[in-house]
Image (cartoon, rainbow, N blue to C red; front, side, top):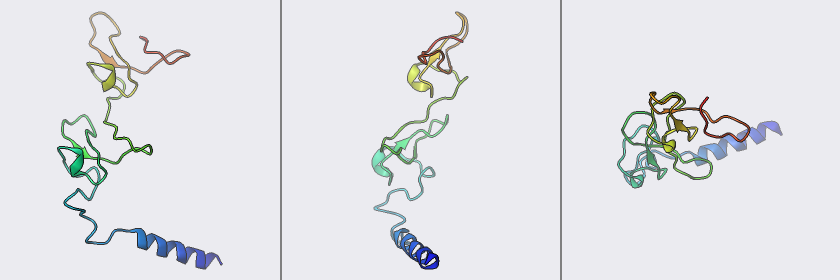
Length: 114
């Protein structure tokens, strides 16, 4: 019984894989994360965004909630605003230091200096 279940699963997986003619769909990027893009319409996933600190845009998969989320700077990176940081927290630690992404702290996970 287990052998026939595995065979059925393998057959279903083979049917779901795209064929050679389907790998490039209407001129859209086949491999997510590899193809540079200028707007969402050029990507099979419908998501053209920054994937790292590099300024270029690339096709990238949407999240499980079907959102196209841009790359955000990790803790310690220089920033100009809260939206640039993974933690959504961009502050100066002293009056003379530059703005940096820092983790949220405290019981309510507020954006406070360390």
